[in-house]
Image (cartoon, rainbow, N blue to C red; front, side, top):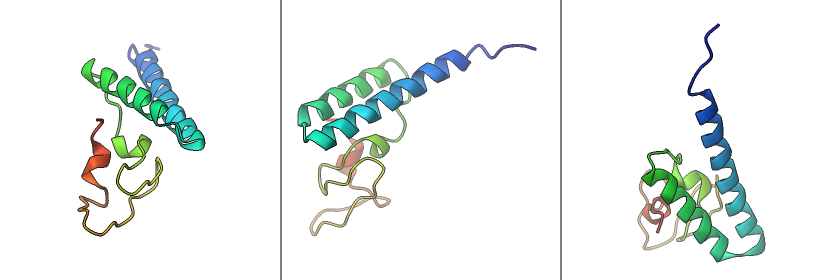
Length: 93
């Protein structure tokens, strides 16, 4: 039986994603914008290193309508949406 050489790397990346999502969830719970910024910076660094952080809207709250991670964006008059999400939510900064 041959072990998968990338298995450990995938597990580590998945754990990193979980920790980033947990950081966002704690930021939501305590209303701490700085924690959101820190989690965004960690995700941006991971992506610069070539790691896929997954869909941003899954772990980032929407700065336009306030939808929390894993929630769908809500319609806001005067704000456009692309595929049911505000474009601003997909940007890290």
